[in-house]
Length: 373
Image (cartoon, rainbow, N blue to C red; front, side, top):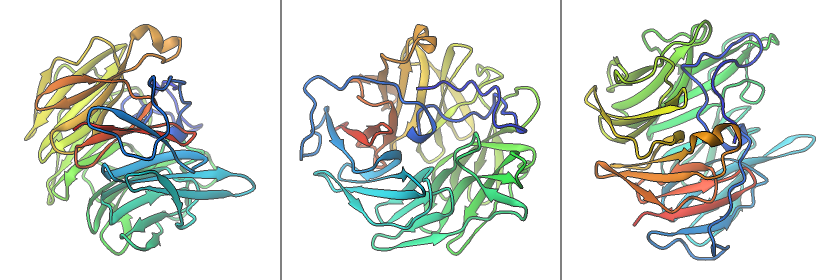
């Protein structure tokens, strides 16, 4: 797995340290570390039992994202690369994965949803929505003189599905052929995408780092400057009517770019590693409380949303940052405390939406499900 310290990005658009790409969230955007499978784990036709991992294979050539509303319902997206890019879709129903048809949207960069009948995918050419039976494509807002570019840019698209007709997305675009990129914060209202109007957020001056939440009236967006010296991220919160700034905890490093996880309405978790150290904090109603992290190791992939009251974080020993990330430790945040669970076999995490477990996966299409019980 590659480590991005956020020091620079695509030519003509330096990345600030405040908004850097999440580590290991999208397999297509990072080199995947080789992590051994759990001893005795093998391909099987049944789902995981409580407190254990179950491994599967997907029919996807290059897996870039996974969304799971429940333990027995999950979607994976990816692509094959040849003379043209072919978008691939796979569906899990509890026993195994199978290929399903879907629209061709280029290379998928983000997938999310609010249920099995409300799934969104952002691709390199357009976006696609699944309503439980059929797919529909919706072209995002693209200003004149720009084009969608989630492949060449240093940014990956993101999507947060707040409700049936309420979707937020980060859409990277390239200005002309200048290799200068901007990130657009966009909103879908049920009929079309439009540029979101958020105080203090401008495509030319603001980079979008992460979008998450627990519903239409509880949306969090991480932002930072696109150029200039490193400076702290800001967390913006939308209550369904107005936007406000949620200051990071005082213990956060000035170069902090937190991973956010929303475990319930008005209740967020933030984890980050900066200068080889980490912090963990919980926010409720705009106030942060700093809590002891699960270990003294370095956070590498944190704050994976997994439904009300649960989140997941992966840590690595500090010494491995420059020698290869080979011995991760996986922790679950639940009921106000950390619990270590058996290590996940693959480096990328997606929490099950109802909080019942977590999926891990690699770029090659191998996945594993942990049933938290």
